[in-house]
Image (tube, rainbow, N blue to C red; front, side):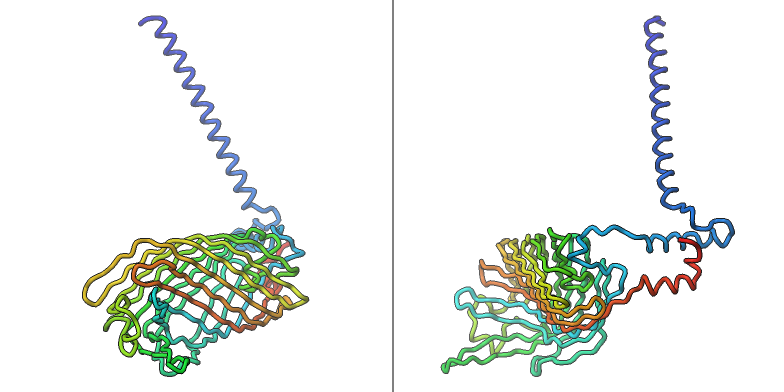
Length: 396
């Protein structure tokens, strides 16, 4: 073998060993740093670890210690008060509004398809991350002569430090179709067709980013977790998405006595599907006067909408994606002394297509709520229970 080749082989072997040694050293260094970090986080000196009972109870005590740890607020506490360590329970009495309108572009007449909703009394549970409601079957206040509506209505609000997301799901069966007939006297008469065969399934997601989150709390205005201590507001931006699927099983949406008052383009429709998405921006503000809080938030959006519909003669039409307008409005007023609170709030969301091939479409949902609630200090009261359970039985 050529001596020069031998020198090359020896040099390559030495270089390989050095690289392997350095690589191994780097891996060892990373593993050691990771293990030191884990040990520092998980092994706490002042938690007992001697006896078998101490070792068995260690994970529980460590978790309780993390819950009780004092944390630095990422917002201005002179403007807001957080109730992160409190359980907020609210009893709301509410009425929801929902509907789909098909609008003739020439005459501007609206064919309105609505559920016969009830008033509901339920329970609402909130902490800083999640708000959810339980509504027992206590329903009253449905309109007479509009039929019966079976409904599933779910709303979840996910609350972050800067981002708030509302998720809605509705499933309605049993609607009434109605419109106004204008009389020669100038008055109008409401024409109603009760339809137990019409079904609507819809869901929507609305996410908002709050810019001035250090001084303004949108969640405090409408979910009762934070409390605004000084008047403040913020610009917001986000996106929305909605999907509505409406079906008539027996015949078209338009029947007698409504048929003579609408043009052919709204006749014989048996299925209607709308998918929309877009971006929105707006502003929210809460005015504070002693223990009275008045809040309002308005967001306007622009996006695209895909519309499909079918007729009872077997034909269907896929409308090209066209522009849609979105409006989301919230308002509330309440008395709040940091523990007890009561008041009212209202919300309204709508999507509207200003351009149409056969007809305009409009979907909307709204809610009016009267509420009373109380915040429980689970940290203060919970420590008594934890001490009785021997989960806090050492020097913290």
